[in-house]
Image (cartoon, one colour):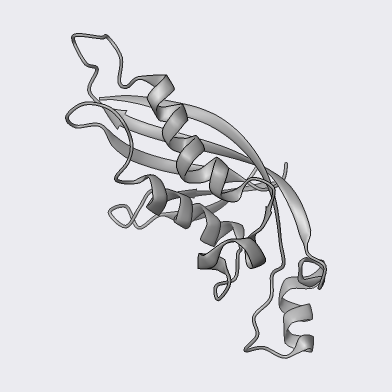
Length: 148
């Protein structure tokens, strides 16, 4: 088993807010991230694949195919958007980085390139230099915040 991690970048803005809560509750829960004008991040996305090395190519997968998949499924969908306003799945769901991380995993899970046995192992999404989130799918039940 070998692991391949590839890094990508995109920028997006969002507002952390739940309509079901009062303005005071939203302000307490989300703080400055609840600004009605939103705020943005320069996200760093790491996509990790796992599987056997293809004996014919000596590689886990074709990197250009992986890049094209991530570009189509993630970068084009989220880069330079306001997540609450421009992304259907976040119009009724709070676009926290936790939720965004899970959504990216879901988008990529069945689309990763590679031969037999290659799978999406993990998505890691860095929101700021102080925190990032990792998700390994339902099979692992892992969603964690780590300090850098």
